[in-house]
Amino acid sequence: MTSLNIKALENDLWDAADELRAGSRLSSQEYCMPVLGLIYLRYAFSRFKFVDEEIRKNLPSRGGRTMEPEAADYKAKGAIKLRDISRYDYLLSLKGEDNIGKSVDEAMKAIEADVPELKGILPKNYETVFSGAKEKQILQTLLTKFNRPELDEIKDDLLGRIYEYFLNKFAKSIASDDGVFFTPKSLVRMIVNIIQPEKGTVLDPACGSGGMFVSSGDFVNESGKSASKAMAFFGQEKVEFNAKLCTMNMAVHGLNAKIVSGEGANSFYNDAHNLEGKCDYVMANPPFNVNKVNYENAQNAGRLPFGLPGYNEKTKEIGNANYLWISYFYSYLNEKGRAGFVMASSATDSQHADKEIRSKIIDTGHVDVILSVGNNFFYTLSLPCTLWFFDKGKKAELKDKVLFIDARNYFTVIDRNLNEWTSWQIKNLSSIVHLYRGETEKYAAVINEYCTYFHEVSQQFNGREMAFTLGNCKESKDFADVKNAVEKEIANILEEQKQTEAEFERKADEAANAGNKKAANEAKRQKKAALQLLEGLQNDVNEILTVAKDACWLAEKFGDGVYADVAGLCKIATKAEIAEKNCSLTPGAYVGVTEVQEEDENFEERMKEIHAELNKLQAESDDLMKNINANLKELGLGD
Image 1: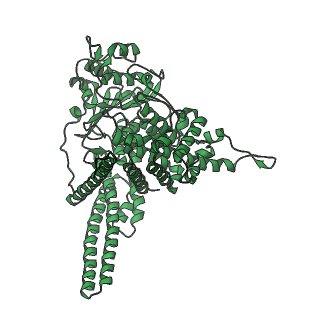
Image 2 (image 1 turned 120 degrees about the vertical axis):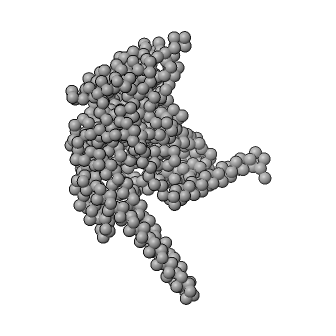
Image 3 (image 1 turned 30 degrees about the vertical axis):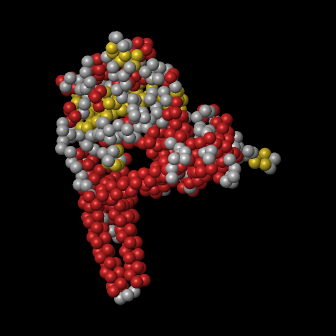
């Protein structure tokens, strides 16, 4: 499936599920785990079918009878041998009068009995949550909705993507106010792209729902290796609900992990997996600016190579735990380990005890990259943040240097309250790091990806004016031509829209004046259909233009692959330069300031968005009033 088709499928499934939730009395939190559990069941069934077919092709026979495959045969191929009662087609076959909730609970229990690492993890409250007649119908409808044939495309891990998409969407509704429930995927992918995991031990001591692990697995799998064989994942998560989501998330993606939850997983006081000095990679999005951490307990827990942050002798509490986290992340690394983590922007130049710790960390030569992130990257946190990267295996010529990147003005607006990096923007920012490290072949690979993309999309526009330029893009110097050709194509489409509308309106008017109502209506229908086609074409071309702009952004700054400091964006600073700036690790202090370039806003499109948003809010308000009136009527207080 294409990315656009997958996106449409994700939206369709979410809209259906959310509409069903709105029609029930369930909160997002009550609804979250059961829905994710159904997606897991569907995924397990898809993998089972795919693997079962492969296994049975090569099964040995004895006495004229084919041997029955064993559970180990399925596990070796990343699947579960499902009992009949846990198979999705069995659940779909149940009639409306059956207790479908109880049957789903039994399906979950059977899987947990056969897969010890999932014991106590899968939701088993369907009979309770979907107890009423209306809720039972919702459950039946959900089972049907999640049975789309596209979801059998195992090789593209489509269901894994759907699971992450739902997790993302639920996070907006039930994310905690410290932002630890879910780390936006673009931040996670940026960390992974700069860490570049290959094999070994991965730790996330604040693992939440497991996004760091999943993205690391994707990165390794994309390189041609098997993440399940090359990586060992370890996580700590104090909130048990989040830990269950993490374990399910790992299972959905075919990854094995050891996740510890509860008070024993409180990373301030526990190294639950005994991994100090043993990790190849550490990745995390810890809660920022935590106070009231007991300094004596923290000191006794160790992992503090640079000493304790500032604390209050009277209350025995650390005032701000940011540098506890930073020290922990460093201490977990082995002699060549890399760490990447999200941190409050204030930590880059906080003073007193924090500054002393920061100075010691800088002196090690292991601070690799510091990257500033703009506002609104989190669902529940509007403030900017910073990505920190340590590398104990840095090349000798880089030990004295740190790369600073200020990406606060480089992002894509999703809506008024949320920004993100697109996959191309992540590649671009990662390319700066590649060039700093001397990995010019990785920069060249990104340039080649752009050229390949333009060549491939050109095939979809045969006969259009821009197709020739797209198809002949061979190197970075061609990107400006591509951008110009696409912009010209958009102007052509807009002109076609005007001409098409005028032509069919003329035909409709002529037919109406001649008294031919049927012909007039047909002209209007044809106008609508033609304009819809042109609008779809315009959307596709706009998507290409967005990629072309990002291609030009990269090529204009770094050409054919030579690193250079870029004012307002990036600079390599020495430890001596950092010392001169009071040991600040704030990228803006080094790269300088550049004027923010604001994109011209399309007024018409913005008004459409506002109108759609108002309609949605009105519909939600109407639904709420209906529920309130129904509840009042039940209490004898309504009309």
